[in-house]
Length: 191
Image (cartoon, rainbow, N blue to C red; front, side, top):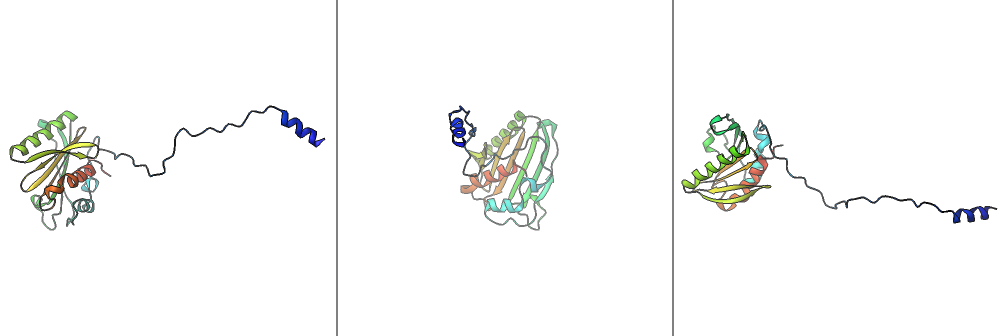
């Protein structure tokens, strides 16, 4: 009787069990998300732009001393709403002009005002003899300006500008695109 019951079950039509397959293929490598960019208010301190250790790592040599913060101001005549400048490698000096690496962020009313300000800087530096070239800054593009004693990188992301200035003693012109690009990308991606 047990065999007859099992035989009857074997002839019953059954709906097969359907297991949905995933609609994606998991990656075997770590996924990197795009860096979060500044949109809106600027960070309030140099640590969010780049710690002295991060700047030293990018430059490839120790930047002595703490970062010096100079909080800038709005300037309605050029559409600037805020500004922050950080000076690295001052050691015991208080003179910001002695800094081998300087990083500045500024926010503007809109992307057009930011782009206009960057173009003015590029034009002024080229007029003073700097050689200009386009360089990547993360997913954005910037302009590297190589002068006799300094290298400068300027870039925009929406209504925010970044400027990184280094002495050629700290960052040789041959390394400036990679080094300043890394610093600018970090500054535009505060943590």
